[in-house]
Image 1 (cartoon, rainbow, N blue to C red):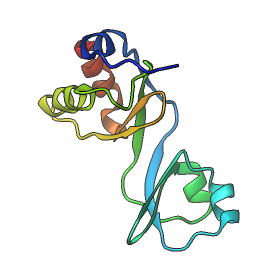
Image 2 (image 1 turned 60 degrees about the horizontal axis):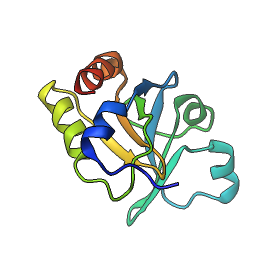
Image 3 (image 1 turned 45 degrees about the vertical axis):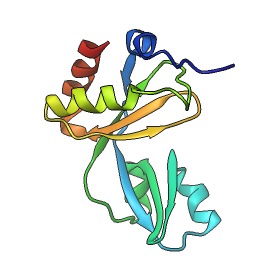
Length: 131
């Protein structure tokens, strides 16, 4: 099933949903597979400095993982193509106009926006206005 590439259609059908959980970003130098399995990260990215993990705050606290900032996640419930042009720009521009910082991650099916937990509801309303 191919994802949508038409920007107008993506924006009209993006249906943003705010997660219930509170997430954190952390960097781990050499995590074991056992630790990663226990942390159950929803996202990872390998950088020169370490492995960035995105996980629930409760898991980080349980394992003594250090982090800065608390985040909510908004998922755009439209199957966007990885080749789509303009969705990330439109979303980040709208949030920037409303003075909301955004960390956008693309999954295979959906885009996910991590915003400061305190801005969660405001960001959701902002994106609903864009849609």
